[in-house]
Length: 154
Image (cartoon, rainbow, N blue to C red; front, top):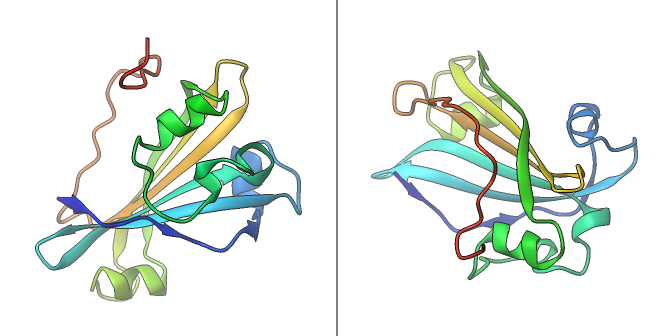
C-alpha cells in the first residue's frame, strides 16, 4: 500500500464529534491534513489527521505540503511531542457517498473506520487520526498500546 501526497484542507470550524475527541469548543478551528492510500490504481484508505489550530498555528503543520521530518517531529519541535494514545476506536459503518465514490465501492457499502486521539506529555489532545478503509483490501490490527516514540528523538 502506498500513501499519496498530503493535501491540506481549508482551515475549518470543528464539528461536534471532533470537538469532543479533541476537547475543543464549538466554533474552534482545526487544520486537516488528508491523503489517500492506494494499491495499484485503487484507493483503499482515506486518511485525515486533524489538529487544533490554536496549537499548530505558526508551525509547519498548519502549512500545506509534505513535512520532510514528519508530522511527529514537527509536533515535538513545537513543544507538543506525542506521548500517549488516549483513545482508539475501530468500527464499521456504511460509507458516505463521497467515500464510496473515491474508493469505487457500491453506495452504502460498509467500511472500516478508525479514530485515534493522541496527547502530548502535558495531556493536551494534539491530534485526531481518522482512517476510512475498504475492508476487502485493508485490515486494522489493534495491538497493545505503548507510549509514543518519535523516531530520531531520545
